[in-house]
Image (cartoon, rainbow, N blue to C red; front, side, top):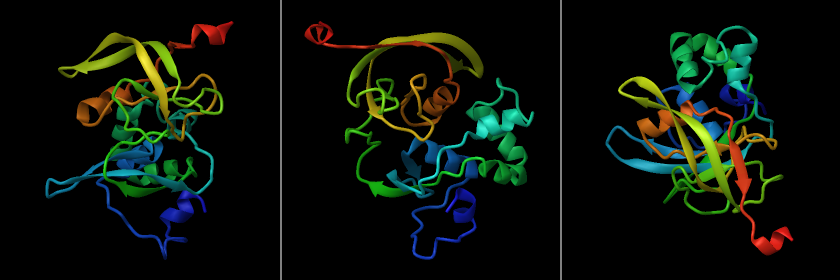
Length: 210
């Protein structure tokens, strides 16, 4: 079943609902990230993690919006997509069909947990195509970043060691990397603006290079 078919309830007779989210944009973000923390109205929170998928390939909502001239490339980051979706909820439902991939989740006691079974570390855990880059390997990353301070964007940079211990629906090919920025509003803003070109170096033992 595709995302649209699942959303219409065609295969949900035996599927339990874990939680209802405030916005379909939050649902899309959770599906792409593969894990998260759900905060409830009573103040409690629980970790949720990837359990399975419907087997369909990932499709980019941002690309769908850009290809149709709805948003420019500069506008098609997460803040821009969210702002558009909140203004046009009926059109966002159509945009969701561009991503037929659907993720199913399970509760976890701790998290978020990466692809090698370890809890992710903010600004150190990254997702790479594990068919190309060895899981758990150490890398050195240099990349510019766009920070938001006092409602204004500021260009900064990141240079440091990272490890390939995460996965994501959109991570495919040798030129794509996602960094785990942590949880909370500020981490979400940083992650939503992160789409810069950078340099990645794989760290190897000297004997392995001979």
